[in-house]
Image (tube, rainbow, N blue to C red; front, side, top):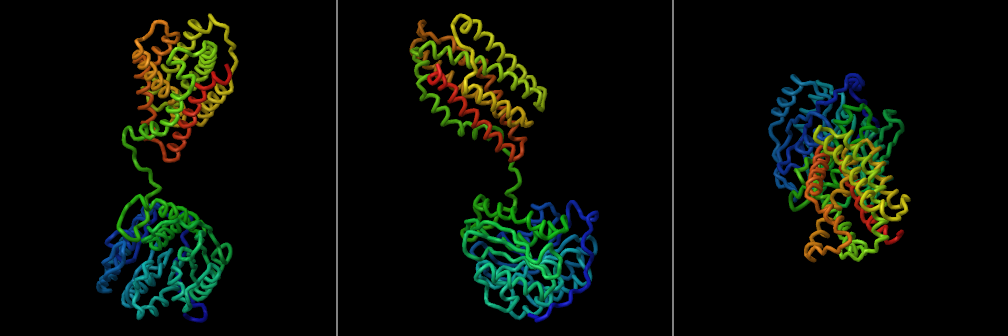
Length: 510
């Protein structure tokens, strides 16, 4: 390495804010990985994942997979020059990412092209040693690579490559890695992205290092956790191309790293979803994109989520005694009184769902449901509560349940609201159907004191309304974002737990 900083050549101006593209055009100059995990294949995925338009000029062909590199073929350097000229003669390039270069002749072609075109953003990933340990750059080409470094704005070596570039043993801890990054930054004038991925421990920090005042401070560290996965193939390629894309949009290296690092962390966390290869598999570049749900898929997940609550309901003393007809009348009266209070609040929340509903059919369904709630409440008062001495005091479970529904109503999310409303349909329908079947199996005894209730919730009209409610929640989930779907699941689970508590409340309070 040169002992003193190398004078940086004249470069294009930093991209002004008003000239940045919403979809930056990013060129990857790198080798090809036929397994799709690294090289230009990883670069193009990263660029697309971060909102850019990817282009590629191929420097080398490799025979590799997740187990390692078997062979490297470097096409004539002159043909690489033709690729680069063809692109830049026609297309404005907002950022360039440079990866595997292969030999000195290829490096000279790239250097000549950079000096001619002067791209505003150049990220150089000095691909010399793969994560697997395979050597990807001939030692005879190292001098040519060192001369190329001052043309880069950002250099992103792994720790083994950083050591080679500064002519020192590989850093064994984070402090030594930062010091090597400082020396490389001083020697090249570029910003260095020092990566902690190859260090031990649970932490996995990254740092931007620059001695020339291009950052808010000489060292900008961004903390992170190590992701326990064997699937890290192409991580370096993906990080560097992601940084090129983000920088073309943001114009700030620290802001770019703070956008790219969480994305890359998520890509590592979701890597096992891909099931690619028997070795060091690829990361999941598009983990953050919402996968479309099939019809009924969300409803099936909710059904599975509520199974423990349904089982808990069947195990309640109140339900067992209700089915047998031995339930104490004061407990049933308490239950009906709370149900009447609950249905009054539930009807208001149903009306809110009607107001938020995206289609006329959904608006009519939720509005009809609100009306039917009020009719059921009136019927309860006429047939049961008006002829019995029952205290109409809001119980703690009823209050908590209605408060939960009102909070879902205030969220402004149609999906979250209808998910919160669904258990009152679904669990009641399931329980009512089961208890009514047991009632019929017992010969539908005329003396059963709660036969009317059992028939009400086994009614086919109520079962059809439940099916419609399930379908509408499922449809809302298919149109929702990933975050909203998660909130829908939580709202549904909370309501399901309240259903269990609601059935159990008479035993505790009556």
